[in-house]
Length: 380
Image (cartoon, rainbow, N blue to C red; front, side, top):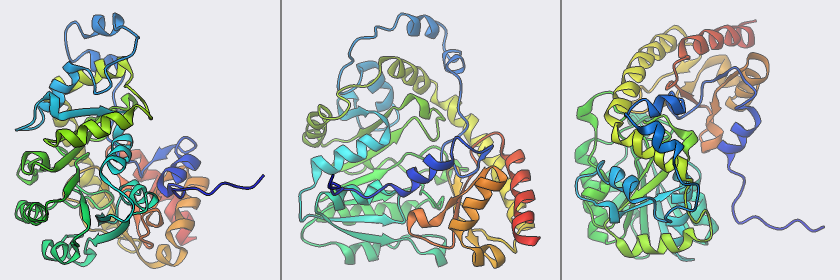
């Protein structure tokens, strides 16, 4: 049988996870934060258990339940529940935004390096994608003046991710506002991936949501990262652009149609108490970042550290014997021989780096294992 061509190439990060994630002892490259049990979520609120037990297992509203959309809207300053569209995770929201907003021949500018679908879905639709490159030499920063030079008459949207995956970079507020000003003058959409928002180590580093600053901005959120609940598979977009949301809703009829009713109930409860979840996550990240700092300092012959500003991930550069071995070989050997998973930078098309995740409670044990395996692989 003749093999059919794929519009989208394999998703390198997800395929790497598919090989190893559930076959290692320590997932030290994960981008989510320490999760909770169903019982833990229900314990946040009196009566939540009864609500879940009596949850009607019929179809739910395609745009998300009104109660859940109310809680999502409360995250923002200027949007209401009608400005929110709930999806099955962030990935569906990315996919549907690209299909609703873009046409073949459109131009898209994407903060790079990036989560692959933020660029690849548009390429698969026949769009021209230009990277807005983060500068490693200056802490993975972005230059708003460079963005201005990248804009074209047919630029349909700009995609930005801050806090950033995989580097942990957070745009300063002045640069963030300068970016929005340039996008607004051009009149295109701004798709703002904010899935790590509220995981800043210092509250003063938190940016406003893009949807609160620009009427053609689309803010992407999810339960998976800061709130530590990826198993709910609940994400959303918030925007004042109701026509765009309507287009995305119509396209959702071809994907999930609606969300899982128990997940919506649990997400609603969790978001009503999101301050507790944020405090829990940030406390863990601060503790774990100190452990990462110490680990990197002890292993300076192997890693060069650009300390992240926010979120549960960093993107150290390999040095010495590790660099000579290469990120792909190193990560394969760490997983296969040591049971510890780091993510090679090649999944982001940035060789010579690895992504490390430090949002989980077992980080001390994971780092101990990593140190032992690195010594065996590189120093024997």
